Length: 499
Image (cartoon, rainbow, N blue to C red; front, side, top):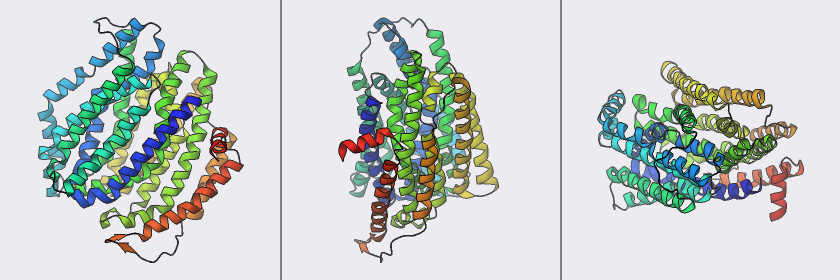
């Protein structure tokens, strides 16, 4: 776990710095400088691009991680990388030629809402395509770097770059350097630049010799890519279908309100995203070498460490969320506590799974990801439709659908790995850790410090003081308990080193 811990720590710092900047953008800048309608429009464009990105990427970013370490000669590696560079074009180019039809479908859908503000998307659908293509090739080159066990630079571009770009452009809007209408244009340019930077870095780490040859296992590569393409597309639906469905019923402003709650609930998953970036190639390498002991070791260690770190942020987020919503400029953001709780619970459960997804994706049983992905996509779509449209549960219903699907299919994946590979991520300390998280959540969730209302330049600061004071109380108690109970040897070793 040495290289995992080292790069995971760097990646975690980068991700949380990105989340802090993203939080400032979300809580303070977006609604003040861009208004709820244009924020909702931006949310819709980014979510829609995330839905089609896996299709354009053609599953190549997973394929690189799966197969690169299995090649022993540079010639075969070069043939493989030449192949994966061009495969996404077979999807991207036809989608581009047919984009007028996609534009018409989008306009027909958003026009169903009674909100006339939805018509502002008329001139912005092309940015969905541009951002999707850029993100697809970014992921390809990011995986290219990850198989060289170099994930930090790509992580900076993925987690920090976008949010800094958003912040810069929002300030540009506030100072009338650009208009609200031009915001998405410049964001699209930022995505183009990000892809170019990632490409240059990937080529710096490893540049293949160009050839027209195909790798010896070409059919196996193409077969795996096709499976992962469909499964990855289905997974993206689970993450972003909510934000795409909302404008068709309640308008772009409501999409903005929901997006904020989801962002806050997703805050806890940063350690998982950081660790997964280096765990994927290591798990793939261990599987390719038939080192089942190392695979199981990574499985258990990743699960308990992610649960430990994620649990702390789960408590901090959910015990402070009511105060956080008081900072928001619009009343429409208030009342999202249930959404935050359900989304953060789903994220914490995924963290509990540890390297489960990496094990399945890189094992000989990878074909199961297709029915799992399709099941998740169909399940979340029909539950969304039932809770949101039929039962009129509003955005709480969307979050509930995500939670149910996450627990059901996550549980199935746990069972599958146990059944096929005879390994699971749990120990007795897992139960202790869950009990600690639940106990501290209930202790600190139902009270706040009695801080009188205070404002600075028309900005309420008493909720921030309350959040800081409660966090100062929670963090030492949590760390003391997990340290004394020796929940994680890695965590205790790290704490001993720095304290």
